Amino acid sequence: MIDPRSLLERAAEQRLPCELMPRTGTEWSRATVERVERGGVVVRGADGVLSGSDVRCWIRVDGVAYAFDASVVRTSVPVSDRSDSGVMLGFIDHWEVATRAPGHLLLEVLPPTGGPVSLLGAAVQIVEIEPQVWTVTTPADAPLIFVEGGSLRLRIGLPDKPPMELTARVRRLTHGSGHLLYGLAIQDVGDPERYADLIGGVRESLGL
Image 1: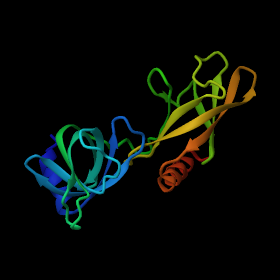
Image 2 (image 1 turned 180 degrees about the vertical axis):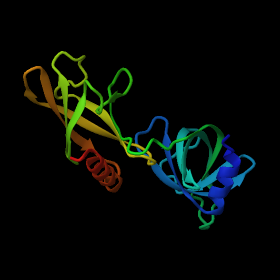
Image 3 (image 1 turned 120 degrees about the vertical axis):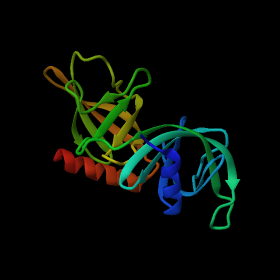
Image 4 (image 1 turned 180 degrees about the horizontal axis):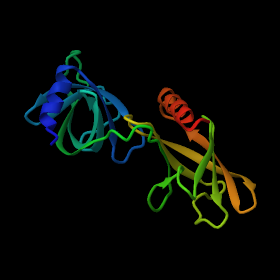
């Protein structure tokens, strides 16, 4: 059984890094666990996180990655660097082990409607992945996911690391025999360093 308070106390003792993303956001924000109080946990450096927002959190403690939900109950909290850059997280819930199976990758399309679509499945498959363009193929008779000229969201992740979401524009490259080949041109990368690390890990894992 997961003991959230004990895990957070160990994280605070070691000043462990954590990651937060607002429920309505698309990018993770890096922070550091400062201390555990009666009302919740204080983290430092969570840029862009607003008071009253709900966030998804990711942290690694003792070699195990965990994810949980929380609410930002207060901002501008004093922290150890003598600034007011702290954020108080309360109403902490839904703890789960976030570690994926070894070698498991996360490559998904997030259509405007409906659930995520894996790019590692039988119907939709990744052919090539470069920092600027992801190339994917679908059967010609598959349900429409990619609207040429339209935009969509992508999600990329590696084992034991929080995923990243991106914006891409769809361009069809080839209409072949029984299949369609699309290029998903990446439009917006909020954290280029993290994105480069993820792309490199995916390419290595897939042998691309």
